[in-house]
Every structure is written in structure tokens, then in C-alpha cells.
Length: 286
Image (cartoon, rainbow, N blue to C red; front, side, top):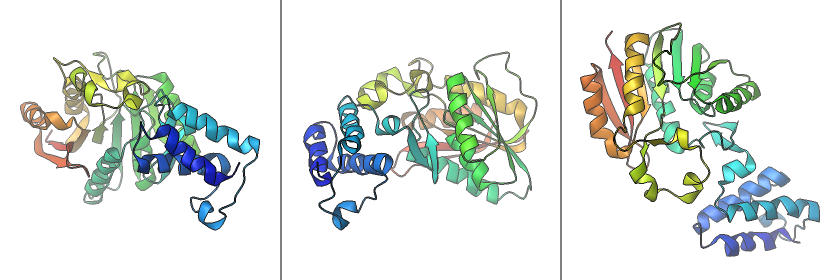
């Protein structure tokens, strides 16, 4: 079968589920991943023909996409801050908004005069935040927590793949007995923050496939994780240490109030590339 016949097949089968641009992306990601073919192959070789072995993974991918399975889980990888990271259903798929949070941290660190900086990533998942910070900050010491042993395994594999040193620990930040053996200059977290009432706004490829414990919080206590991490920060941030969060866009005002009530200063909320209030920074005076 010719490759040029498979692209319209993707569109015919998926047009009721996804916009055209996204279907194009699925097709090109698939041929790059499974066949090591560049995106411009159809322009260079319009008659490029596949054998049965080459066709099979493309048809299998198409079948999975029709069930709403995320392309990132199908391919088993995603790009984040220039790093190719392994992902599976035990970890959230890293988003562009989280890249913006990492960029904000990098800006803040560059403005800081300390030679060595200690950073804690709470709820590391795939390790996307801690690994990208470690790659961009060679003098930083990175530690990361996650409640899921499966997520820690994925994060460690990603760290090994990119030859990055991060100290990973399986731990539940909600555990009252949680103890850490050091202080940090920065604590960052992208914790669960989606209320059950917001699930109806989300796509099925998220609700049906991504790990629920990394997504959802009770409707009656949506800031649960932020409250706990704030308390952790009070005892484990150095004086003038910084706390960075990814936040629920609908709860930005509530987050600012919480940070003030918990004694943090220099509170700043930023919008992401989509115009949503998605990031927060605060300082602990100590």
C-alpha cells in the first residue's frame, strides 16, 4: 500500500473525533516513530510504498486512536522541553503549560546568585519537570517525590535515558508522617487539581486513559494538595525560598488567598499560552 493512501485513511476514520490538524499530527508522528520517515517524505517520494510489516503498526495505531487512546501512550513517548520522555498510563502526559512553568523557574534561578540550588519536585510523574530542570541547571541538586511506584519507575528510566541525576523517592505528600532530610531553595509541584465537576469539560482521551489519582481532587476540598505542600514548604524551604505551582485556572483567586493565609509573600499568578491562569509563584520569608 502506498503511504499517500494511509494519510486520507486516518482522516476518514478519525474525522468525527479529532480536528484535521490533529489527525495530520497523529499520522506524521506515527510514521516518524514506527518507520523513521521524515514528515516531508510524501513531498519527496509521493509513490513511497509500504510492505505489510510497515503497514501493521500504522493500522494498529489507527485502531487505538479510534478508541480515544492518547497518541503519546500509543507511541510510548512525548517531547518535553526538548527531551524525549517515556510515558505510559501510570503517568500524566506532560503538557505545554507545564513547559511554561519550567521556563519560569529557569528565569527565576538565573536571577538568583546562588551557585548551587536545591530543588524538590512534588508529584513528579514522568519526571518531566525535574529532568528538564536538571538538564538546564547543571549545578542544581534535584529531588523528586511521587506516591506511585510505577511513576517513579518511569521517571527513573527517563533520568537514566538522558543521563540526568535526580534523587527519586516514593512518598505520599498527604502522609502526616512524611519526613524529608534536607531543605530546598525551590519546591515545585503540578499536583492533582481537577474537581469532579470539571470532568464533563475534559476529553475522553484524558478521562478514560490518564491516571485518576494524578488528576482529581474532591469538589469540597479542591486545594487539598496545595494546603499540604504549603505546610511542607514552610519547614523545608530555605529563607526566601520559592514555591512554584501549576494551578486550576478556575481557582486562581482562591489560591492567592490560600498563599496569603499561609504566610507566603511575593505571590504572582501567570497566564499560560492559552490565556488561562495556570501558574503561581510565592516566596517563603522563613
